[in-house]
Image 1 (cartoon, rainbow, N blue to C red):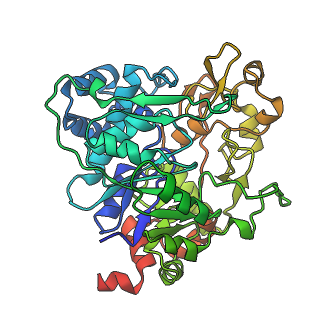
Image 2 (image 1 turned 120 degrees about the vertical axis):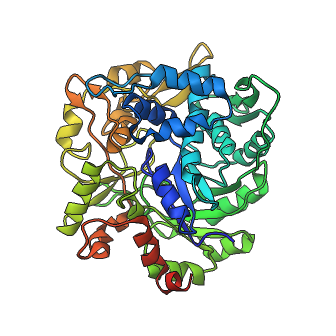
Image 3 (image 1 turned 90 degrees about the horizontal axis):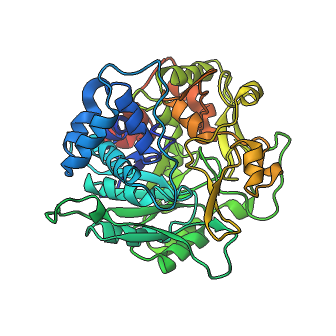
Length: 474
């Protein structure tokens, strides 16, 4: 039976294994974030792996040589709080073996821990926009028995076929978005699972269900007709959702705060989506019992909820950042800005306005522009025909030398480093730790009313609230 509530895949490990496990154990769909899990795994090991959770999951990884190599290279028993985290080479179209191993292992670990101790379904969320890590990340999640794959921030048309192949340990290829290609020219990236295996004795795998996250009925129709494999349903996400939003359709207009204005063209026709005949869930401002009732009345299977789960006890947000947001909520001082400039992707990005974070002009101005993680870099074709990489939040001179437009650098923030800092794994610089950047949906303004007299709450509290009377009947 499909879940009525899907917990959204948020940030870098905000939707942690602990949160996803807590949601799934309540009979709903817990979802881990698969973004940058190679880096998260390295930094958790470097910090000493408190609780031993990483090493326990790594012990279950079926390729022993990789498990032993990664623990031997990155685990520090006492932690290294006064040292910068180790940096990996930035991922490129042809991944190095260390990248493939860490991406597969990092996602295996997160899914394995989310599934530990129960038999309910667990999902993983990846961003279509972050293309290069996608294939080994998916394979690692499938090795751990992931039940659902959710992907948005783009059109994931080639992912269903990759899931088909990986469930049989076969290689898969996806096309890459590369600026400057000739008409008809295609550049892709391939991952062959057998490069990881020292043996032909392979485990039997199950192909997970695939749920693209889309914003319009036309994309639902296109995915069912043109995807290279089976699509099992849709998540219909509106512009009030947190993280990256789809840009408005038509001519871009801004309000007095500089936020993009969405109109009727940005509202999905739910009847046309229902006519496709696949289950769908509504997302974006869906974290109330009234929103669930409305979704079910419109023919949806249920809702996807992120924001309320982001600040619960089991969330991957570090304690300090979570408590700051809760304190502001209880004092009625929450504000979320749909920032059209923050993300180097060019997509609008929801940013919680809070002191001592990258939402402030001072923190932005004080930070030396550094691009040393590279997940949101864009690919472009250089004059010599090779593929280059640039990021609008990297040093401006560097970006311009690579052919970038200086105007594209204005207001761009380092989302990669900011999101890692949000979960407590900020890089140590000469000037101190990287500042966090928090993202939430517009309904963060309702957090104070939801909490009432509480100062904290659990994932179960969120589910019980949204389910209303249904929770008592379950």
